[in-house]
Length: 466
Image: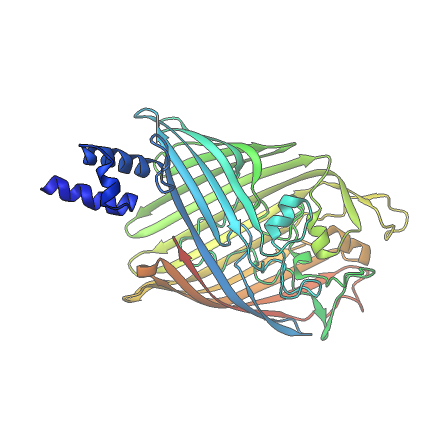
């Protein structure tokens, strides 16, 4: 009787058939059903095939962003920024032997309006995906679905892991990812909220001269990474690349990584994490080198600054980040520093600089960032994170600004914020305020770029993981 009940229950739940079709299954119905159920379980999307497992993870993150640049104020609904935005991730693995395993990762971002591009006078509230701009070589698209990672790996517990494909290189987000406060997405040394918003002077917004699209000169022009031609200082190696990567096993909390990418990019990184007497410590240092005959120029479309086109890329970037937390009290401190060495050669394709056919217009700048706060569980919902942040970017300006007489820049950033984690829903809610104070110097600055207005940005948002 028990076997008959199991057979009928499985028949109704799995096949959804009636008693008439059950009679057609033959004498031993349960054996047939059990075989079919096992096959379904082995091939369903949450399991993978019989040999390689499959897990689906990710998160959805959206926010409301308000800004005031001194000339205008607006409120938009955006994501949280490319490479950190809403996504789903497929991870598979298979055991080859007690020591060896193999697997794969496919991660796809689903971008709504991107805060990295929203707010400029050209795009307004419909910010195109920064990741899509990178992947397409300059194409502008909002609400896009873009491949972030796609690679396979072989792993040995004794020898380490080798990954091949579109990967997060060893230095990608290296200094940022050590932040264990629970506020990394909401506040880090990349100004994801506000990069595209126009700079203004005495209540009047800057527009790029001669640009028919009425592109505003963005704040991102003062946080420019020469090594990747992206306005994401200090996470200058924040974009994945087609490459080969090696990760060593962890020994006593230490590990090393290295990767090589196409024509030509290479980097190395060293990491440490440990805990002593209730104090958590994590630190990462990374060095990367970019050499090529050309350089990605897609974000020149976004900034409107197209005076210089690179003809040879020769740039390196060093970054280091550290995080310390006193676990019993919840007090934490995070810091990061990055410096570029730019020797790239650019061609002046517009003739804006009289008599200069070639120029090494990209400066070698540096940037640093500090965040301190408190992570405590004051209620049953989960931990609350309170923090303050401060950072400075020196001479990280777009090379085309030299055409307007700029020879130095500084962008100061500070902010305050709060995050409330909701453990039962794997969710975080936040509110934060950011203040950006830009300034530039040089022979062409007086009367044109002096006395820039301060940019204010407030975001309120949520992130739920799955």
